[in-house]
Image (cartoon, rainbow, N blue to C red; front, side):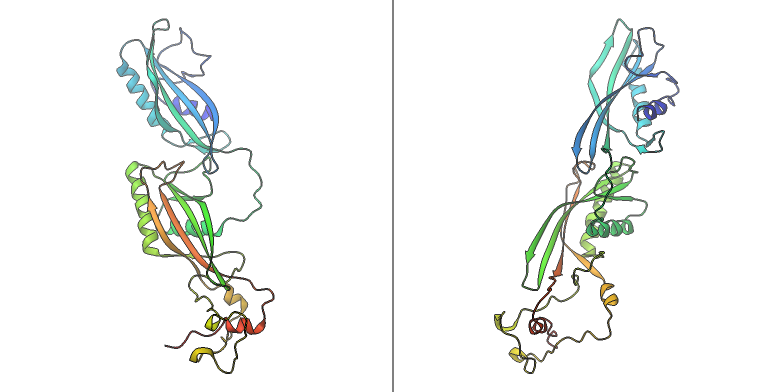
Length: 328
């Protein structure tokens, strides 16, 4: 990383190869030159990884701070582009502002100003992933790719080489709520981080996510394991008259309902498995001033209804739960 930053800064014409580490530069070093100082890694969060602070010091002859301003602007513009390491990985430097006041060093005959940059998404030693990807995140990533062209979509955590403009979806919480003995409701809170090329592009991207979720209402969803019907299917009805213990007489449907046990017809188990399932969008809110990398600007609450798996339910009880919906 240090070498990638050094190589990028040597492209600044007025500096050339005069990009040094702190212990190399001295009073006799030809001016102008740049000094790179690396800070320690700080654990930011599970999704943002570690943060490393980097200080860049443009040093010019003791004339006017206008020269420092010009060189500092060149440094900021140069490091705003993604950088590539020798191993082929990419990373981006985020400009965080200046370090303290302007500095005048009479002994070295220089004037300088510290510029602070941050590199996020430095990850610890990777562990082989054994758990499958969360299908909710997969569904949102697929939907987002269809909504925003030319945006890269990530899930769970920022990679070191994220490419702007990009989006990160991560899960923040989950809730399970009983609806009846047959089904329950699963609700998840998901956070969307929107990182654009420009401030206006970032704002527009976040606004598009908010409007798109609310307009879509439902997000198509698939999973590896069959966990029952999706939101688009009618949940099984409660046993009639609130009686959960007595079987229903098939010959005379209760309460005048002319329904009868559902005939699954010619639908095969594979066809059942391929039925479309959906996640329902319940709430969407946004804070466009939130930090795109560490906090995320959009919060979405999604839900679905899931049928319980009965491994040894009495046959008559299952029939009672599968009455046809009353005609008309």
